[in-house]
Image 1 (cartoon, helix red, strand yellow):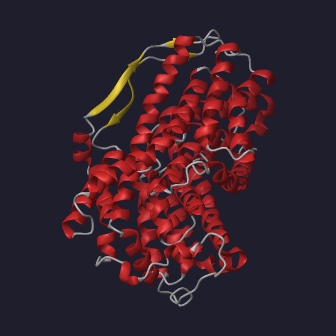
Image 2 (cartoon, rainbow, N blue to C red):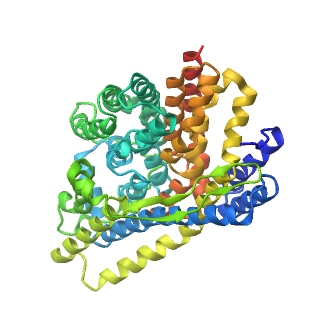
Image 3 (cartoon, rainbow, N blue to C red):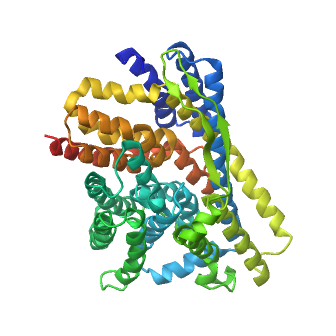
Length: 534
């Protein structure tokens, strides 16, 4: 690559990203309005400063459209499942039943915003925990804005070893880690140690949001227990089997929260009356308005989702058979005037039809629809309305998702992403290790995927660490831990939540609150990587 890595080129590469942040946070623009502006700036910088031609821009845009369609499939199917449950009044039943199971409202919020999302991230990922979690939280009385923020925080820790290790495998492949080798497991150990920090931050942040210091004090023991199970479990299992390193602790934390709810300090009714994240007026419907539905029946679509996902992803022969059926498109080799090369693809980012998260969501929604119809909780003529509402609710987010993903693909395909990373390394020298997790965070912020961030920067981080004689395992762990944290502030993931929470356009408000929580733990991870490299 012959792209000049200087301050001007670095600023040009950073311009689309800072524009997005300023428009969304400072000027309160929604992602739907901000994404086209960021995309336009990206195209201009690509053509005039990064020597890209129109065919290259068109090809990278086509890649972005394809990838965005895959994301939108998840959005639509998650919204469909929400509409099915909402039409059957299942959320009212869930609210009533969960409130009885968890009389401590803080514990209830943590369960629905952190524990359940952790489980979903362990098996599905791809934004499903946020899309599914937001309406469930609204159902128990959480304000829509906070119903988006809490799942974003709750799912982030599982973004490396979750989805059965997809992002971790991408890092290992990109950085050339030999599976089962010493460096492989050492890197996994560093990664899980970093993520343990974030898990503690997650629990404390949720308690703080719910009721400031009073809630932090009340929820400290619960946070400590859950963080020990999730963080400690992932730390231990990362040295045994990285595929299940997040999934097993996530499952155990579900059992743990049930036992915690029986503890003396949590078994009685307790809540912060003036909690800023709760709006109990929205859940004032009387018990008489509830359908004759059990809590188990209310969770039918989610139970189907969990069982089906586990069966298909964990049972290897089933997974191998169904994974054969995939769709992808061929793209040619491209090259910028600076010699930045994008390889050709016979099948770019193929979607495995029967093992993709959207298929799990769709089947779960349809089974839920038929089940609720059979029980009389949804009248047969209502199915058409459910589908219409789900499409109408998804359409507005399409512009933002397409714009953001095309922007990230063009930046990656023209070398702008590489210049951002290389510029930091060139200026900072060994101090660069402090920013290693921020590189991972940046990659996920842009692409919406820790896996994509690891593919983009894994090799770069490994090469830079070796050149600087830094601790490569600590640096690579910081890369993917930062990428996991970055999933909490990725605009494309935020859109999943604002869509299903029906507050599309409030992405800037979400980002403004949540971005500050991500910066301190990311910096702490960077400092640990730095001291490990001294």
